[in-house]
Amino acid sequence: MEPSEQPAVTDSPWFWVMVFALVAIGALVAIGGKYGRRQAGIERQYQARERIAAGDTVADERSAPRPYAMPGATLIPLWPLAVLLAAVALAAAAMLVREHRRPRPDNPDD
Image (cartoon, rainbow, N blue to C red; front, side, top):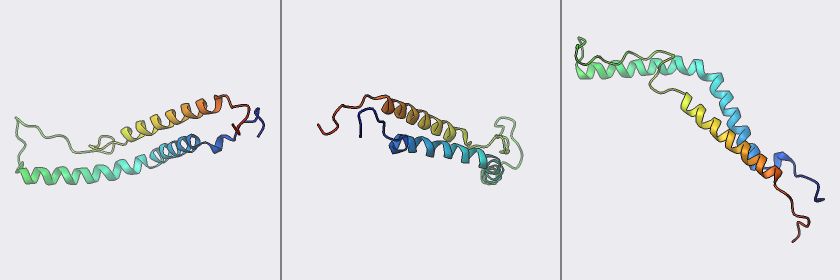
């Protein structure tokens, strides 16, 4: 390889970390609506079982229970996972740029 040549960007593991993180974010966006509906149903069942087990047949004025889960307001949201994946993608992009701009040695055999 000549000193002026750069290796292909796809040879870097940081490129693949970034690609997989971005694909995972795309998958979260794609399944977000279906996840919200399904998770809300599961959480409503959980909340109903908890209230029955606690004996809350009549709402007590002192301890108002949390409202039942709805598709837009679940106990377990997806946004923390999306934020984590975005941070991984940004870190991988920064490392990829850093690696790509690093000066190459004149003689790689040394």
